Image (tube, rainbow, N blue to C red):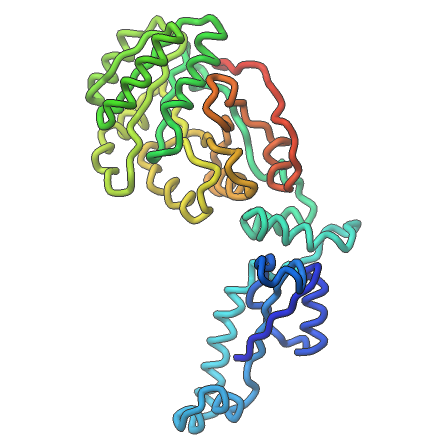
Amino acid sequence: MRLKSYFSGTVEAAMELAHKELGEDALLVNARPSTPETRSLGAYEVVFGVLPRNEAAVAAKLGNASARVLSNENLAQDVAGLKREIERMAQSLRVGRISGPQNASTQGSTDLYNLRIENELDASLAQQVAAGTALEDLFEVDSVLGKRGSTRSVVALVGPPGVGNTTTLAKLAARFGLLARKPAFILSADVYRIAAAEQLRSLSAILGIGFDIVETPVALAQSLEEHRGKDWVFIDTPGLAAGEMEDGADLARLLASHPEIDTHLVLSASMKPADLSRVIDRYEIFQPKKLLFTRLDETDRHGALVSEAARRSLPISFLATGQQIPDDLEPASKEFIADKVRGVNRKQPVRTLGATA
């Protein structure tokens, strides 16, 4: 196959140029923002491929005797297979041929490209937006802490190492326990990192909130019963890497089966979409009920947040940025997240503290 790149200020213009030169049978192989080295040629690079139409063309490409003696039947099969493969690769990138709503402007497909490529929104969701579905309707948010119907709020944070579980837990405890002036308690089940538990103990002392370390799932269950009089109980858990998930299996079973525990999966908004998806798969054993994203300020691509929330049917609960306790944590807002995906900077609205429904 012959490949050729076209550069232009918009994806549509590059595609139009390619179709004029290569014909309507040209296949879209890739579309992406130009690199710094090629940006002077245009804002976007669109790569097209042209399949060989006969044996001679194949032979010329491969340059060997075996290519010259291919039968018409084998050639047709090879070309068909190659075409199917390229079509699969190009399916999510055919932004120039996706039609928006009838009253959309010609900017529609460029907006779709921005959602899909620049902001890493899932292709199927981007197509729904192009068809007229509001981005806000594709995912849910839920900042109510604790399971509905329970007499108290018991919240556990789980997640991989380095995403800010412990700091986020302290923010929640300060925001909902201290500021709401309700009895609160913090339990740390993180016996793998002594420093993290001691950090949380110090933060609890500063906040004036009770604290204890529980070394086993059984001890955690017992402690939950001992502190039944607390309106808020926050549970910190160890950050488990891929090779450590077996170590957390017993804890996962307790969190998944306990009737009061509201488990939030803490994730970094700056993760690559593929990594984000793998981590969520890995943590399914904990049966999280909500997704909580940290480090929102460390990336300008937020499409994966919406993609995973929609794919898993899990609402987004809270959004965290810096290290300030409790200021750098806000309940998730559909409008704010949607604007982030669109590339619109808007201050996250401050909302009233949630409560158990």
